[in-house]
Structures are given as C-alpha cells and as structure tokens.
Length: 318
Image (cartoon, rainbow, N blue to C red; front, top):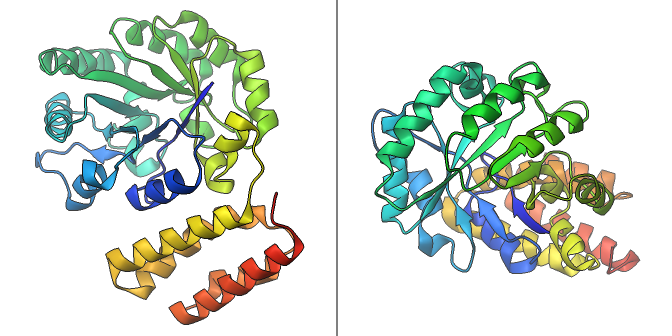
C-alpha cells in the first residue's frame, strides 16, 4: 500500500520535503501546501518557489490548489502545467475558519449546486491541458450524511482519485474518524479512493488496510510529522535510527538558515517542528522544553547537540 504525505500549511514546504525525502524513503508522493488561486492571477513568490521543479528534484510532487472561482483555479492549474506538472489536487477539505468563511476549502462542501458548477467549469476549462484532477474532501460540513450528496457530484466527473479525510468540517481534527461514513463513500465512489485521518502508528495503518481493503493509498499528515520514519516503518517495517533523524533535523536547520539568513525566522520554524517531534523522545522533556524557549542560534545548536548526544548514549535505534 502506497503512502502519500499530506500537505501542512507553513510546515511541509520544499525545505521540509527535501530533507524528509533524503533521510526517509517510505513516502511515494508529496502534496504541496495549498496554492491560493486568487483574482490577481499571480502566484506568490513563496508558492512559485515551493513548486519549482528544481526545488523538488527526485520527488513525486502533486500541487494542491485552494480556490472557489473556477477561472482563478484554471489559471493556477495552467501555471502548474507550465512548470511541468500534469496533475493538480483541489483542496475541498481545509477546516480553517479563515478559509471556510471565504467559501474555500471545506467551504466548497456547503453548497453542492455551486460545487457542481465549479467542477463543470473547471473540467471544461482544462479539457485541452491533459491534466489529471483529484480532490481532497471531508465527509461534509456538519453531518457525515452529507457525503451521500457530495459523492453524487464527485461521481459526475472523471476524477483521478478522491482523498477523503474521514471527518466533517466541524470536527476539525478532534474525535475519532467517522469510519462508517467513509466506508459508505468508498463503496459509492466511481474513482480510486485514498484514506486520510489519524494514522500515527503501524497499528493504525494495519487497521485501516484491514477494514478498507479497497482503498488504493493512505495519506498521512500529522503522523509523519510526529514520526518522520513512519512511512519507512510501514513500507519495510524498518527501525528508526536516531542518526537519520539527526541528519534530517540538521538539513532542515541548515537550509532554513540559508534561505532566511535570519536566526529569528529559522528558530521560529524549528520550534514549530519540535511541537511535533517532542513525542518521539520521551524522557528528554526538559531538554526539549529548553530548545523551544531558546532565543539565539548558538544556544539552539548547543542544546540540540546535547539532546542528540544524550539520546545516542541511551540507544541508536527506536
């Protein structure tokens, strides 16, 4: 079963993806954090840089687009085509209030008539581009039974695949995934379905593939942030080597330092990642707490070096 890496806004950009791909090999595809299709018909410098092929060498990348105006999304899709991409993913799942209230992300699920019109215009506008189109969705806005009407719309179009996060928008990331509603959507779908939602361990993965043998792939987001070696463990049941994590960490730090040339921004990015990583290293909470409070690069380097030396003194393999 293939593993894809879900996009996480502000985190899984090309700096992170390159480091992850270098040290951990269990992921087949990486989806970019959403590229906003806006009325300016202009890609932000950050978004363009993140999608540039030269910044994603050797990786299978799928650009994800966020938008509610089909003409804007068509323009953005064509911009991705010019960069060499033959596939786009539409974000119909982001639950963020700032996204939802603008009718984007999970806001697209609020009105199936509008969503149907959007997809009709989009497919017509891109019919000569030779691009595959997929959707990342939720089960609905507030009620999982909304998936029945959503699937009727999705089944009307030649989607390459449908990625379903097994929650409704109002769940955000809380509570358990809604497996029964996901199963209903899986059974209804005319296209291949990818499961997404709460895969943090090998046991979680095995439960999903046992319960839903018809899915084609599993997309993992937070689980791969918490344990970047989770894909390797799933794919080959490999152990997690501490030195791999150290190399991974150091590459991210060095690349951010080169890009920003500013230790404040670099440290902000690294501290954000430690919120996810700290659960890997139980018994070192005090050390990681100091890392998350540090205010300068020299101290950060010293603290992380001491942390890694302490971990290696106890074990080399997880």
